[in-house]
Image 1 (cartoon, rainbow, N blue to C red):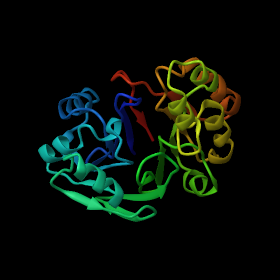
Image 2 (cartoon, rainbow, N blue to C red; image 1 turned 90 degrees about the vertical axis):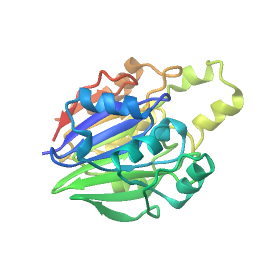
Image 3 (tube, one colour; image 1 turned 180 degrees about the vertical axis):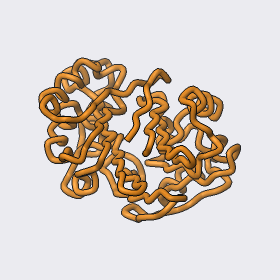
Image 4 (cartoon, rainbow, N blue to C red; image 1 turned 135 degrees about the horizontal axis):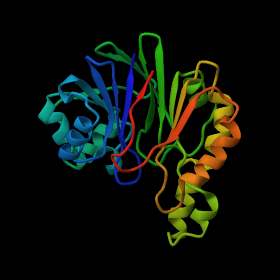
Amino acid sequence: MLTIAPLGSGSKGNALIISSGTESLAIDAGFSRREMLNRIRSRHLAAENLRAVLITHEHADHTNGCRVFCDQLGIPACMTPGTIRKLRQRGALPQQIRQFLPGARFSVGNFVVESFPVPHDAVEPVGFVVGYGTIRIGVATDLGEIGDDVAGHLCGCDALILESNYDPDMLANSDRELKLKRRIAGPAGHLENAAAARALTRLVTERTKLVLFAHVSAECNQPELVAREAGRVLASRALHWEILSQDGDIPCFTL
């Protein structure tokens, strides 16, 4: 049995805990050390069970607490060479680093981690499939599109954590600069609601029991719009799905 505990998801911070009960992994550490620990305790999880933090890419909303959090717990941060380089430039590297190349497969405790490259405007961004026994959890929270390679990794997971970042009309009508709008909507930007929902027609199988929609924009999206698109695809599926929020009031999910 595994517990998925989202600590928060959005432009102000992202972090996720996957726990077997005796050992845990974190994916990203986008909150301060104190906030990370508070949110972990609020979900009745033990921080001392954490074995490592997996870092998807260098953007601050995924790495803000990485250095201090890892150093306090004495655990490594696992990241690609490009991400290491960017965090080193910012003085944000933890004392313990475990390097992997995009596409690498490695073990952390009894977890088996598969990494895969994703199209995003970062140096060397990746998604992950975390395996524990027969359970597989796919995570892709910052990417502009889902091509065949990404879909091949995510297809058939027991749980999916997938970005549904923006609504195209809300983005177009926002006060953001045109350059930023184009970046977000580009192939290396973020995933819009309808594209995320369409992708699920390829990713969800009879094995899939849980879908969590992540990184929902506070300015250019609404949970109701995510739900509308998701409902069109998932209404007839025998699975549970929810939309993650930025704050700490998010339930845990068990597989």
